[in-house]
Length: 331
Image 1 (spheres, rainbow, N blue to C red):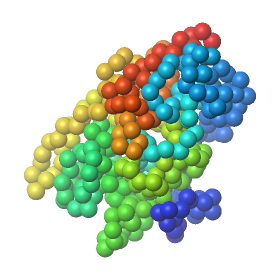
Image 2: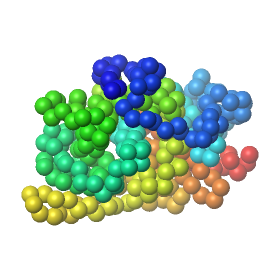
Image 3: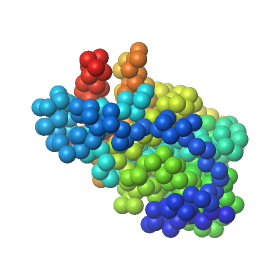
């Protein structure tokens, strides 16, 4: 049986040789992965390689990249994985609820690999909902389907939903142990999050929890999150969930059925062409946003981290999106 790493250890390649479950290869070939060192990317004006050493002022004056407040960002072509522009995109930082992108991704891989019924009832433990921050308003001992939980994770950005998913799915890959702290009960799921990060070559990413609340042992970068999002756009079920403006869940509470309506925190869904991904915020990570723009033959993945405010992150994203659309039209 695979032994999860200690919380402060980055998983080694040796650990991957003894996985909790067999992790499927991502894509049919190496060529399907975003190539971060290809010559085409390196030679492209405003590309990731070039802009790592540029200031935002340099990017603006040399390549016309709009000035934005985000301290880290990347714009990736969602079709071929090419980096159109970036700034501090490989810097390791906390990414708040953008962590939930991996939580949702891993949950969907387990659902398929282990043939878990999407409408299987999940149990909400007392410990799982003893958490601060954004919430799906779950209560101890609720019973809710996995399908609804995924919506509670991604739309209202429920930290409680993240814990419930991680705890229940951990029991699917390792024999459950009830008399230990929640952090250890969910460790099998966290280990899988890190295994998938390594397989996707998210080399500047490590997860310590499934929700993204501040922890110095959790970090990622804009470039790694773009790589993950490129995988997500190939999953119709994940995209369906992330593109919903609201979802009504039915759960069992105190032997009664109740309905909860969850609204998506992602205001970009109100604009034409914007169709997915996730918001995030903690005091340490700042306002964050992962966005997908699709229109005609254009597909853009935009990751912005640590913006000036929650409101300005929408403007930052639109500025970068409009610039990238013009750039692709010219090229």
